[in-house]
Length: 162
Image 1 (cartoon, helix red, strand yellow):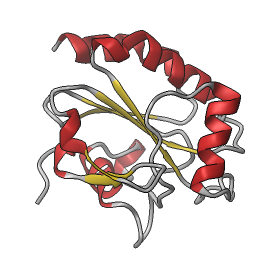
Image 2: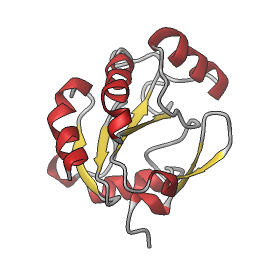
Image 3: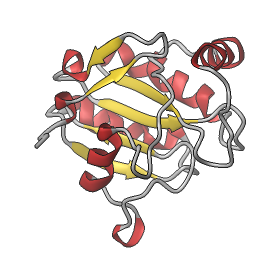
Image 4: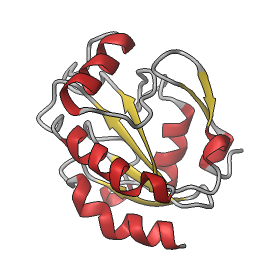
């Protein structure tokens, strides 16, 4: 049974396996993303967090998902190109995954059980749901899609100081 985010692996957008253990001791901001969503401009805010806090240890990880309104139908190459071209994304983007249902990535099954949503719901409600994970690999907080990345700064600073 996983006890921290560091017990998981994911595929980078280029298809290479990444052990999340490589980020051990660093706070993580994990976000399910989409390229054609009303919240897509949050990529700019996520990139700003990466630029502001990356050298202090924060790692932003984007996980494209096409489960909400089919708003990320492209291939991994198309998604990666879109994020870089339109938002200058430099933080790690992962391969497209499911975040809900029987095919949900094990990381997301764990995150949603560690930090349920409103009224204890575990499912992800929409694109750009965010999870802040502490240096210990445990989930600190879950944020709603409408929570702008900049509004997380105080919590990120606290996680970096811990």
